[in-house]
Image 1 (cartoon, one colour):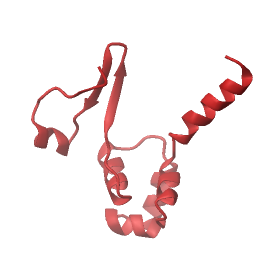
Image 2 (spheres, helix red, strand yellow; image 1 turned 90 degrees about the vertical axis):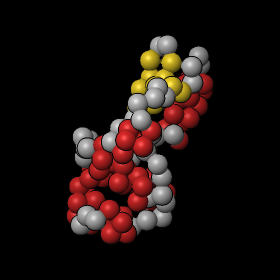
Image 3 (tube, one colour; image 1 turned 180 degrees about the vertical axis):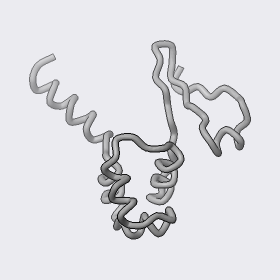
Image 4 (cartoon, helix red, strand yellow; image 1 turned 30 degrees about the horizontal axis):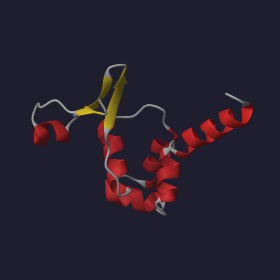
Length: 101
């Protein structure tokens, strides 16, 4: 793979990766708006956007407040598995949910 191909590949990956702050900004939302939608203070949203470790329930609330849905996918050599967490597990039951086999 040449240098140009590597640069293109890196650019492609980066276009599909975003921080929470970038997601919020792409959705044209202020921290105060997300705070109101999640029941948090604006300062809590600011701290959340800078954290590297957070609860999945908190992440789900943030994503829902910005208009999205959270899907957690584990990648394995034999195929990807979408993990059912929290509310999803009680709604979906215990059925196997496999993506891209």
